Each structure stands twice: as C-alpha cells, then as structure tokens.
Length: 170
Image 1 (tube, rainbow, N blue to C red):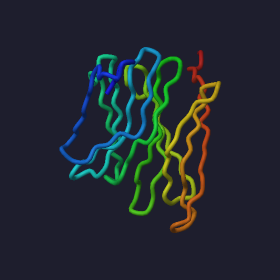
Image 2 (image 1 turned 120 degrees about the horizontal axis):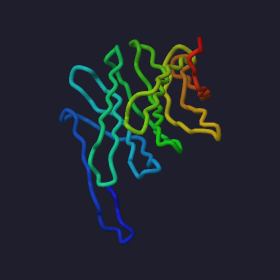
Image 3 (image 1 turned 180 degrees about the vertical axis):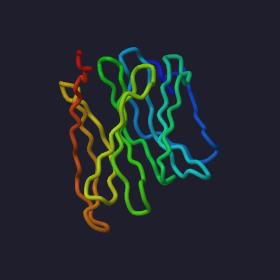
Image 4 (image 1 turned 60 degrees about the vertical axis):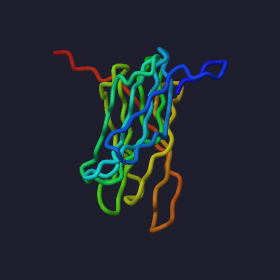
C-alpha cells in the first residue's frame, strides 16, 4: 500500500499466485517511482517459488517474474535493491537438492527483462542469501548464511563485480 503524508491510503495492491501462502520479503523503489517487491509464492506441485513484482506508481502490477528451481524445493526471494539506471538486483536462494541450497542473485533491467543470474555455493550445504547492496561502482554485495555442518551456520558474503562485456572487433 502507498500511504500519503496525511496517512490516507493512496493505493493498495494484492497478489495471490495460487491461493496458497504468498509473502513479500524485500522492497525497493527505483528512480522513476516504480516499486520492486520480492518474496515467495507457494505452488502445490512446485514448492516455494521466487516471485518478484514490478509495480507502477499507480499500484498496478507491471511485471510478475517467477523462478522455480529445477528441484521444485524452497526457492525464496529475500531482498531487492535498485541502481541509478533503475535496474533491480534480487538476492534469493534456490534449493538444488534435498540437502543443498545456493545463493541465487539475479539482475533485471527497468523493463523487468533478466540481464544475468549467478549461483554462489558456500560450504556445499544450505546457503541462504538474505541481503543485497550495491557499492559505489555498482558491484553487487550479497550476504546470508552458509551451513558448514549440520546445524552450524556462518556468515557468507560475496561480491559480484559487474564488467562491461564487449564483442571483439574483427
């Protein structure tokens, strides 16, 4: 919901993917006033899916971006940040086996087209990204936890350096 300075509701938007449990976890507003929201939608045959919404300044959903990992396990969007060009970066995790999940980071442009995605494996067990930030060079910093042994977690932080890739000139 968007609330005015006088604390009245300007607009309210709901999202219900499959009449099961859906919940938001991260929110960011880009320079054009669009809202980026990420979280989880639950599906009866796919488990939990990462769902990221792009919502315009009137509260209308413009894009619904859903990622279901190949294992059909618990895949969750946890946090989102936007850069000065209105690109959105989402920190997530995907279940890749019955005993393993990895950081999953994805970048969308301002039109909600996926630009890149990156998996990060910490200690080869349960890795869960929970936070994301950009540094002054637009490098992506993702933090969360990594299970080093059953029930024992440590901080895991990774930096993804973005570089322009240019095609070679013949």
